[in-house]
Every structure is written in structure tokens, then in C-alpha cells.
Image 1 (tube, rainbow, N blue to C red):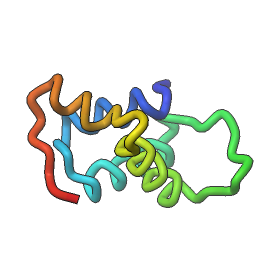
Image 2 (cartoon, rainbow, N blue to C red):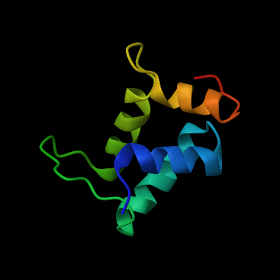
Image 3 (cartoon, rainbow, N blue to C red):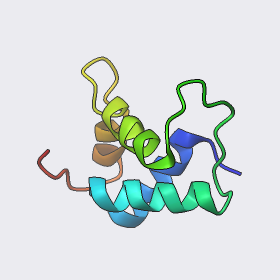
Image 4 (cartoon, rainbow, N blue to C red):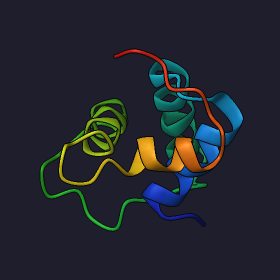
Length: 79
């Protein structure tokens, strides 16, 4: 079972920097139990949580998705 960010990294390698594809694949991974949230205090649906992870990965103070893509030669798409 993968952690949330680890799963997003795997999906970036598979789908590239494609928000819709990565988020949809993340939702499927939650549904099939490949990735599990430890808690859901805010009550996010899998879809809203995937979108929040994507947004979190592009914040100014920790652009971990962009850094991962650059490090792995994944072309960045425009947002």
C-alpha cells in the first residue's frame, strides 16, 4: 500500500503532468485500496482529495510535483 504522495509520483510517471489523468487514476487507486488515507477529518471525497493533492503539489512553498517532474524528465503542462 502506497502513501498519498508516493502514489501521485507513481501516477506522474505513468500519466505525465496531466492533472485530469493523475487525479482520475488516484481516485481509482483509492477505490481499489492501492492507496488509503489514514484519516479523513475534512470529509473529502476521493475526487476532491485528489484535486487537493494536486493543488498541494503546486503551492509556492513546496512545489513537489513540479520538482519531481523536472527531476524525472516529465514535461510540465500549463495549468
